[in-house]
Image (cartoon, rainbow, N blue to C red; front, side, top):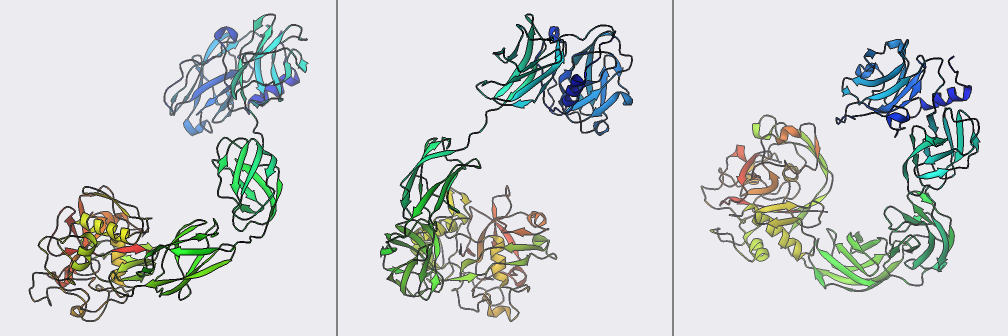
Length: 634
């Protein structure tokens, strides 16, 4: 006579249907449901468990695994039971990780179970069908919850466990459990002990010395919150170091942090599992101190922050005189650790490059004049003033180019097509003229070969790498971080550095257009602005810079005189890649060894000096009509 499952067993089987990752570790003699020969293809379905491993012909059984597809139709999935394919009405439910099925008139015996989808065929599981007049065997059908920790009540569902426990027991991995809170024929309950390390542990029942099949649980170790036991001292000033002692802070800081009220500390001289030191941040006020470890908040201690008796003090500058838009170091004390302001004459705010309690590094703002400057700390306290002097010469004049969006290229010219939208999202300075012979010689301590002589003539016969070397040397002179790393003829650029560099092709054209949409960046007579074939009298050398009119943004000789190196490598298809619009483009990668030159030269015709005209030239070569100009981000 077929033995009926009681209500608890039915509920347990329904819960199994919701499990997504229960794997089994039994051998065939423990239930015969161990899948074999798992496929290697990551896209093929995988069977991990079939429960119950032994059942009657019309019982619902569960196939647990992965990559079955969200629905049966999603991958045209089928289930093979022995040589038979289950019919549609024999599939009770189908999900990515669980198939529930039954087979009408399933013959008694052991049957292979295989899942097939369009992605492939699964490994083989097994199910044993017993006669209706035979009792269910000794087996586990479900373990809940699948994820547990110490102290969790674990429920083991199955059949033939026995009405009472007696000398029977449960194994969790290698841990023998003899104390249970419930034991009957269909269910065992117990409290999960400390299993040590987190991970997967097998679950099996031993009855009269015989072991059941095995299922698995995932044992996790609860994350304990950080706990502060001591804080020393409990009063301090902005910039003081505070020590916290306790537990569960984490061996390293990683993403953890300390909050002083609503202000986050940024400086940590020490961070261990039991001790943390932090510096009281600027703008912090008296309030609770808490540690956050992986998003988990500790208890709190109250910190009283005293008003500072110390104002910021400037002791000296790194030198006495400076060029416009050059770097400066300010030395002193009590500047604070949070960035504040440096105000220069006439009430202009400097660009901050580095800030700590005793040294500040700035770039003097455009328009700064000789006068005095002071430091304003983040808490708004101001320092003493100190005089500085601006050398009012035009050795390396630059103009500020405002950020903006423009249409780059021209769709009627193949080399410049298609026209496309480009956004430059930062302000930058650009040299007002191409680099002159005098400037080049002074910075590099050498002259280009065969160059026409004349201090104010545009430097020429300059190779690409030599132009980059000039930019690095100019950065060094002004105490700015270099943009270029140069190894032989190989040059890489750090576009985030504050030093000097060549403009990108987009930056060059944006500056040349000067806010216009015309072919030349201005509408009056071309000969008033550019040295080219029509007005250079057949000459064979570049001209002195700055002798003709500037464009609307104060840039001279953008067109004609000498072609100008830009950063980008040359590609005939790069503009097509930018057709949908780009921000701060720096040119194609993997292009040829040619770089782009822009602007045309004193021998070019009018068609070749338009703002969108572009040509390629070998990066290791030089020519009598090629020079460059430089930029620096604000």
